[in-house]
Image 1 (cartoon, rainbow, N blue to C red):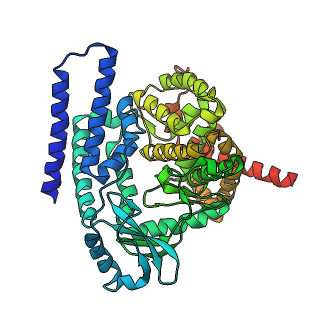
Image 2 (cartoon, rainbow, N blue to C red):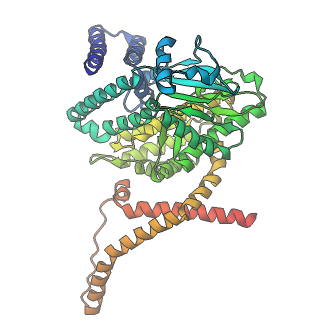
Image 3 (cartoon, rainbow, N blue to C red):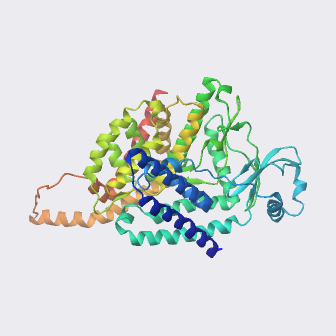
Length: 507
């Protein structure tokens, strides 16, 4: 398998390089010719990724949000990457069903449509079925051999990435290719074990009960390669007719989807990484159902809170807040130009803030910030690529039904709820204990210095030295102080608590 996949990779890369060499040997006549060549190159790259298989398609989808890594024409082309494949013959898929559910697997079903799969992706196929108790279900079956193929591809990609990191040390200091790849691998592994996807669905279904009208299919049964779930009512947003929904319902659906997205980022710290229009089902007068929970992302509290501060900074036209929060998501390299990044933000943030709210796209805004921060030598958290993909997909899904709806408005309306949750988390017994340990640790460091100062005071030999400040405080100074970072998060918790108490006081 390794040799076979390696040969395919070398063949595809060789064809791409040969095409580049041929193109370089011909003269470019004018900007139209240059634009045409860029489109051709982008198409070749997209076709190559689709030819290489699902892992490369997933990587390409994430790269479509990373304009700091790929040219704009390539990024636009990669946005059209879809994980589709020709149907696998059912006799091969039935072998998987027999291995996972037993030789009498057909007895579970009153009907099983083997002729027309509901969906054919490169990792699995989905079939409509009716259980023996009459429930309509979808049966997701993993393609034979795909787990071994993707595991091999992960090994090959990891080796290529390490070679790239060694050959480009300066670029690798700014962009952590291995960490970025690890985020993609972690997200994809859930799709190779359908019991993990089932667990994701159970968690998500419990979480979305807080959002009226949003649902996640119930899991009937799951094994490593087969997942049986309740069938979602209606049709996908991709195939839905917006005219079938009145204005109020379109706004309700869009608001619910954006609310679930923000809840995942800022409260649950777990989000659907691929909410494109094919993965959201709607029906007039019925629930909105999110399917396909194989690819998810997880955030820690620090990244979640700094992301919130970044988005609120964009919404409030606060360039300094955006620059500060964005730098908190990663770390400056030794050659980072923080001052130039702050200047970039002073230009870009007002421009983004001036866009009408119904046309402001947070996903595209994150891509812009990512490109500028990379150019200025700031290494950004590798999860940002997956976040950008999730943002862009969900915003695109909402635009299908409710193009007038503002993601910014929904965020502002959700801020109170998010701050309330932050307050609850900050006041939890576990968090209070952790904060107490941090304070005690700080006191252990501070007490010896305090004793030394006390001895100097009592002996009358304390000397104060003033050193002129030769440069202004920068974000590098901010990043260097872990205590300041912790204090900011405690202040965020305190702000949330104040908001919560005021709200209760008004009630």
